[in-house]
Amino acid sequence: MAAMLMSSTSPIISVSGLSKTYATGFSALKSVDLEIRRGEIFALLGPNGAGKTTLISIICGLVKPSTGTVLADGYDIIRDYRAARATIGLVPQELTTDAFETVWSTVSFSRGLFGKPKDPAFIERILKELSLWDKKDTQIRRLSGGMKRRVLIAKALAHEPRILFLDEPTAGVDVELRQDMWQMVRRLKESGVTIILTTHYIEEAEEMADRIGVISKGEIILVEEKAELMRKLGKKQLSLQLQQPIEAVPATLAAFNLSLSPAGDELVYTYDTQAERTGITTLLQGLAEAGIRFRDLSTSQSSLEDIFVSLVRERA
Amino acid sequence: MTTVTTNRDAEAGMRLNFRAIAAIYRFEMARTWRTPSQSIVSPVLSTALYFVVFGGAIGSRMQSIDGVPYGAFIVPGLIMMSLLTQSIANASFAIYFPKFTGTIYELLSAPVAWWEAVIGYVGAAASKSMLLGLIILLTATFFVPLRIEHPAMMLLFLVLTATTFSLFGFIIGIWADGFEKLQVIPLLIVTPLAFLGGSFYSIAMLPPFWQKVTLFNPVVYLISGFRWSFYGIADVSLGVSLGMTLFFLVLCIGIVGWIFRTGYRLKN
Ligand SMILES: Nc1ncnc2c1ncn2[C@@H]1O[C@H](COP(=O)(O)OP(=O)(O)OP(=O)(O)O)[C@@H](O)[C@H]1O
Ligand SMILES: [Mg+2]
Image (cartoon, rainbow over all chains, first blue to last red; front, side, top):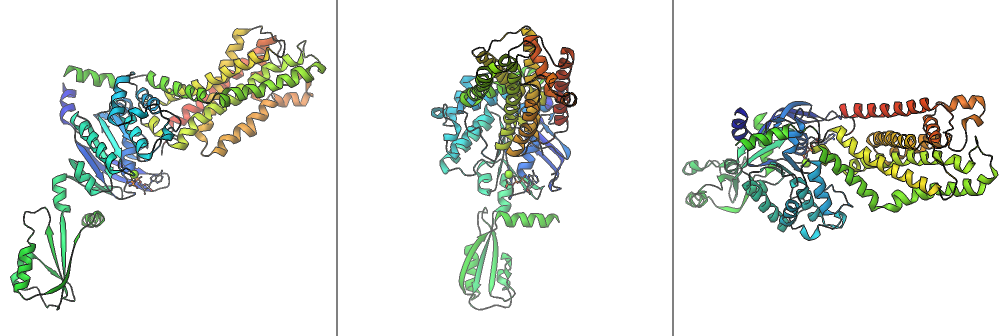
């Protein structure tokens, strides 16, 4: 009874106090705590070297944690590794395949490796969904990079996992395959599979995820519902280069919280793209009424890098 | 709801992933049939050349050893030599290659115990080399007069040796972090030991000092026991041969166990 209760409400993955120091002495994860909810799509966002692959590799059993624990579907990934791993499928970041195997045999192999009985009909369905069916007897080395990535996805799904890790699934993938892939991810989510994907691109996380975690230098610096994060990230700046330097921002424009450059020749207005009214029109009217003329203007959106930097500074 | 609980219990209770062992074994055997000329024809052919040269051409000029014609005398030793080298080559390559290409990620992420992986890989490597040994044996009958006095013991030595040296190869494959290391032990240690292990001569033919030195060569015991199962003649007693062979098997199992308990070289 307790087990049943736990299985429906508890997080499907819970990571606590997880650290990893590689043999080189490099500390790739620093006491990470993270909970993944049952059935969600979670995007792990972070720059190169942030520790995304390390985190995934520990959960999946490829890398040994230095300290901390991970539970997958309630099972400790080390003590109950069989039960934990049976629920997890992994699509690795690198395209690593057995060059001389056929698509069919490599996918069937994966199913056997995870201890599932043969089910040709199921494998046929996966291959068809991933548009690999006509390639089923082709050796993997004769496939294109995008096709190889599909094969890796098919292998990860071959044992019907409840949790799927996609480590940078869209690296080197064209628009069409990306759309196919997102469709497949949505179908999997509908069937109850929890999906964790990593990416460098905020747009990708925005398109797919329910929640987003940001990782930088081995630390999870924020975990947020997507809508909330988009609001935070949705800030833009409008810079106005003035024809004549001014001494101070006129009192009539105080409501806009403008910032004036030290030389007095540039005004910067920060606004929220997600807001109903950005206030740009009224600002420009206000400037005209105050007799401030400008010779150029530009807008900029804070990049993911900027946001990382500011988030890390906030914490420091 | 009850089915959910049952499934969880079934998953948690998986004690032996037999399907994984079978999958690894089949995968490895399939690799053999994909390249038969490399994995079967060439080792058989190179051993058969010995029969032609020593059995046919030179053998007729050589004295019989303990009443066994020279061509027939060398057959057990030659089979042992290919059993050793092929077992090591098969098993070391089988585990090294996935490490090299990165496909080992899947094995590491699967609900597979280390000893299940060992059974799959080592079982396949041993099967292949035993098959090879039997094919060589069959080939030999075309060139030299053979008799097998103790077939059961012969098969026992075949199984023990193939398993032991496949385990040894597996250890090399895990230890190696480059193709050079993969080659160096077979080339610099195993081949000389095999050649000096009494394939081509009886230990009794050596000067007394070298007879003593030779007893430090483990291959001597394998070849001596194996040859006994053919002709009932041996350099060292059967019990010692069998004992040493079992000792090497246990030693290799122990090393593999230690490697995996310490996670040595497979996981960061
Ligand atoms: N085997 C290893 N030995 C030593 N350091 C390592 C090892 N693997 C990874 N690292 C280091 O750990 C850090 C995190 O690497 P990781 O692969 O987890 O980053 P990532 O977030 O996945 O990056 P990317 O976006 O480039 O894939 C990096 O600085 C990397 O150099
Ligand atoms: Mg990575």
